[in-house]
Length: 165
Image (tube, rainbow, N blue to C red):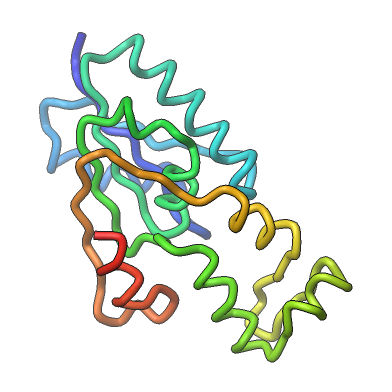
């Protein structure tokens, strides 16, 4: 049984981005997951099922996850199967990000709860169900993890990354 790297892309990304990581892991099979859903409750299940399948085929799984792909992965509950994780500009505090997006769009919790879904000028859509889910399912992540965080990241605050790390 060999080793593999599973790449989970961020919003607007693609599984083909996994090719960037092949030179960094020459003795691993590098696979990009093309997830088909975009909510933590669905995408987390997709990721967990993929990791559970991969662990029957490989002796070790390394994870590389970008942005919201890191959040989806942390929400999958599959950290016990991960040998090592590398997160790139990860969304490590989704509640904080949603609350920040609400502030930027001048949306209150009461408005979001009453309307359910609110499109924002930035092109993002705020969802009461998403916020409720995030609050009711706090992330727990215990795999050894390294974080690459860019100083120009305007979505995730340095404080959120420090708290996570």
